[in-house]
Amino acid sequence: MAEADIACAIIQGRLTAEVVLRTDQVIAFLDHRPVFKGHVLVCPVQHVDTLLDLPDDLVLPLIGTCRRIAAAMGPALGAQGTFVAINNVVSQSVPHLHVHVVPRSKGDGLRGFFWPRTRYVADEQAAYATLLREALG
Image 1 (cartoon, rainbow, N blue to C red):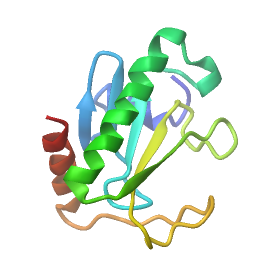
Image 2: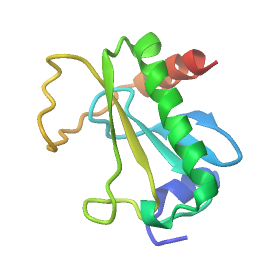
Image 3: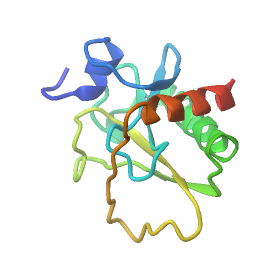
Image 4: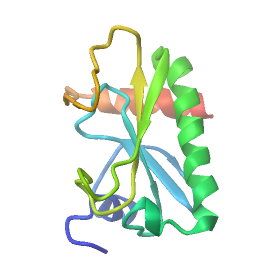
């Protein structure tokens, strides 16, 4: 595990997170500082540094989970679409491959690659995670 690997800490249960989906291969949890509320990070459970290091047998589980999360954001959160992105080395703040799946709506104010961040209040993060888990069934 790389130093400051928050994803591995969450996967190993050493750090809490609002997990919306977990399989033997992939974990998806809410970003604690979302671009928009409901912003999910999808990671391989196996430690993988970057997209270029991702084993071929994990490509479909990772991307398939991103598709499921993106599809759930409409029914769960009322999102009109999603923004899906991977920072690969440059701007990759966590040394564990993670895909951002961000709920979007027309006029939400997101422009280009400037990612303003917000915070959840009180039990709001748990409520968003519950909505997504229910939509994922």
